[in-house]
Length: 81
Image (cartoon, rainbow, N blue to C red; front, side, top):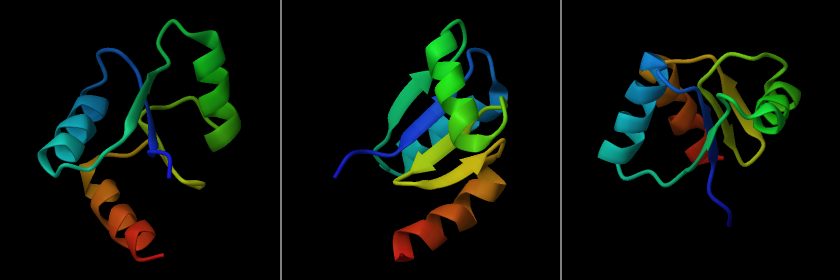
């Protein structure tokens, strides 16, 4: 199974916190930096309906414009499905 995709922007403190949380908890993911990448930004917008980061695509389940406080319950939910 492919890894979840985390869309991030350069210099985004929420993105950095989410990356630290995923790394600290050994949760595998693929990072896509949308800053300066029109195609990646459009992919994120198409997926989430907005342009804010971070955005996480967990095998079709999408969490957009979030921090670690929103990530934890989201991960519990999607990992149980």
